[in-house]
Length: 327
Ligand SMILES: Nc1nc2c(ncn2[C@@H]2O[C@H](COP(=O)(O)OP(=O)(O)OP(=O)(O)O)[C@@H](O)[C@H]2O)c(=O)[nH]1
Ligand SMILES: [Zn+2]
Image (spheres, rainbow, N blue to C red):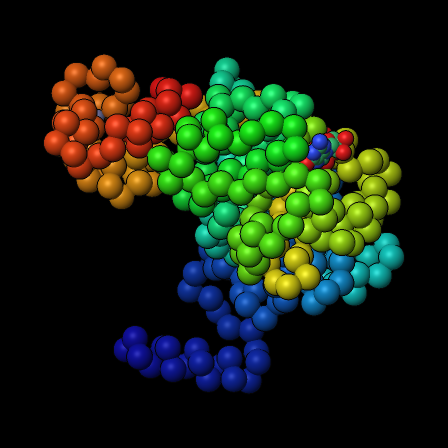
């Protein structure tokens, strides 16, 4: 019986006549698979600037897309409507493709509301000046926590090495396994270029650390790109609250974010961060339930692991210092 009905349905469809639906239409997800996929490179006041086949297309968010954090820089989206990119044209984002990662922060620790910042990054450069402004390990630790929580590989990128030595920070973060790159004016950037080539790297840092200087050296026409954003918004880039994604000449992306004064991580749990370190995760299986592994935690298996040589005291100290930033 059933079969006959199905067959009948198909036959009717072949003649392109409206058929009676057994389910209401609203429950069916429209099929957008034939629409082009673009990458969101900046967001400003409800307008999304997307890159599609090398041209910039401005789009708005379609009705069915969630309002809060529905579309962020780095997202891959399907565009409907006018994708010509011509002056005054407006397209519509109808679907956000599945994200590989999402970097989030809470505005500050009094505010547990998570703000998504950047989608699909696979590497996070914590850009920190060695002086002017003075490095703050608390800030580095908080951004590290956010990176580990989001399963984005962190790299500590130290600028202004002409002003101060990187030794103290190297000593603090190398035991944790954080790669460290050091730069100064006129320094050879080949190590940094190698690290970002072919990857999607989000740059995060305090205002004034030299992030723009570095980006402009890495992408010779980045200035032009930021100029275009100013044209779009009528404001300077630094007053924008959005991140900006730029394609690297040799492949890969840099997603620059506005300078931050603080980095809230209220949304992160200790288990999530421990989970980013396979060796620590294994040791933590022997911890009492709910152990936060902080210094002095009762029966924490990390102390036993140091005692019997499975874990280096430097690595544990480095982990605990970072963890103290959020427990
Ligand atoms: N001594 C020294 N100064 C630097 C270096 N890199 C950048 N600067 C200077 O530091 C200042 C801030 O640099 P920017 O590149 O504007 O810093 P930013 O991180 O983009 O800051 P925001 O625009 O506020 O987000 C500028 O005066 C730069 O010339 C460096 O390696 N050494
Ligand atoms: Zn523990």
